[in-house]
Structure formats: C-alpha cells, structure tokens
Image (cartoon, rainbow, N blue to C red; front, side):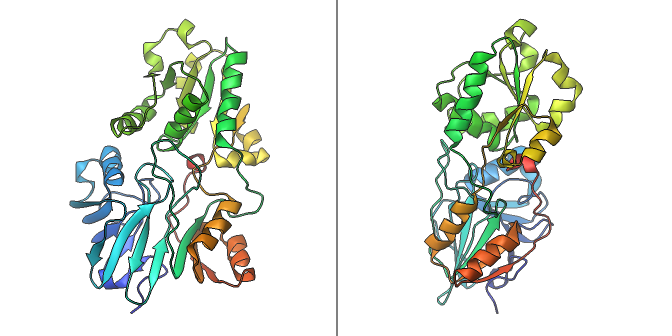
Length: 330
C-alpha cells in the first residue's frame, strides 16, 4: 500500500490531509478556509490551528480534537506523524509521514520570510516533498515586506488629512501587516473592520504584540482623518467604507505584483506582502528538502514541475480540487 495517495489520503492511517469535505480523520496544516473546514469527526493539528478553527467555526466544528506540538511524534497506524513549522500563519505546519522505508512531507502553505510571533519555516529532509505553488512562476519575486510596510507608513505621514483604507485578509495578513508597521516605527492606533477583531484578539492572546487597535465605529470623523483602517477586500466597496472621506485605498497581497489586478481593483497603494513562498523560495525549499520526487498540489503547478524535471527530479502536478484560496489571502 502506498503511504500517500494523490488526493492526500494516508492509507496506513485511514486519514486525509486538509480534505475539503468532512471525513472520519483529518490532519490539518493550517486554518485558512481552503485547508480547514468544519464537519470532520476527528482533527489532528497544532494547538493554534485548532484554536483558530474553533474561533472561526465554533467549538463543535469537529467531534474531537487532538492538538500536537511542533516536532512531537504521533503513531497513526504503521506510520509516525509529526508537524513542523511552515511559517505561513499562526499554527501553520508541514506534516511529515514516516515509515521505515520512506519520508514524505506535505508542506501545506508556507513562506520563508520573518513573521513576528510565527514559528519560522524549517526545511524537513524527505524522499517526497508535496509543495504548494501559489506563486510558482519566475516572475513572482517578492520584495522586502518591511520596505512595503514603510511605504505605507510614509504615505500616512505625507497625507495626514486622508484616511488610508487597506484591504487585507482577516487571518494572517492583517496581523502580519500590523506587526510590520510596528517594526517600521508606526505606533499610532490602527482601526479594524469588525471582521478583523476576532483574529487580532486571538493573536494577541497567543503573545503576538499588535499595539493599539480600535474600531472605527468608536471614533469621530475627525479622529479618522489620516488614520489607518484595515478591512476585508469586499468591504472597500460596501456602504461601510463611506464613513471615510476621500480615503487612499490600498491592498496587501502577493498578487499586487500583477499591475492588471491593481488596476482592476482600483487600488491606489499596492503593497506586495505575501504569506506564500515566491519562485526563488519555492525552488530553494525543494533543494533544501533533498527530495528526489516533488508533487505540486495547487497554484502555478506546471512551471514548477518543469523546473523540477529540468533539475533531475521526478515531479508531477496533483491539481487538487478545493484549493483555490482567495487571492487577498496570498
């Protein structure tokens, strides 16, 4: 029996990794909605992934929960399973499946850059590496995220009579942008759309310092002049956004590299800040694992498969369904 099928079913353990439909036993890499859903009977994940799933979906999102620490070894059937930092968001993990003859790592989503309060990605040596490829084209080479945050801080200092309304994904990207701004020296209050509050509170409870966070509904129009406001991308076109007079609109996403997307969304201040590995990080990570075979789960699969084969590695695209993460989460 193969250890891992192409749909990420683990035969010897009778479990799936990140299934997009309810199953008896699920191993979850992280809590974004294209990887973690409600309805599984038993969930095995890091403590923070479970905590975020409960926050998003409720305590009863699974019938039972089994939290595991990074590096902790768990027996599942004939296999040994362990979770290792992926650096994507709080609690995110790569999953290592070990048998006496083979080691397989399923990366989930990952990034290699620094993210305050998030366990940094750790390359895990393996025989087969199952990787994402959200930004799996050579054109995607992310700039320094701190420099992008400084670009926002500079605009806030320059245009002190205008609110800055920045679109960010509520889980992961919002907290990272706040942390980067604090590192860049921006210590003013940051205002949050209601959809951001729960996740920011959770991050702070888990020890991630985010500074003074407030709700726009509690502020006067005068206080909001020149203020920084974070909101989901959909909110930029809702009635909610009309409370801000002549705001400068921005968006933080790896997709802001693509000028056509910037124009389509009417974004004035694009911030190329991504929670996924870019092309160079993807190819370097494959080298770091020393894997002889690479499976590409989702994203720009074909280019990365081609690179692997040119590099002498066996490679195949998996074209998994249900992995079309919203672009603003990238």
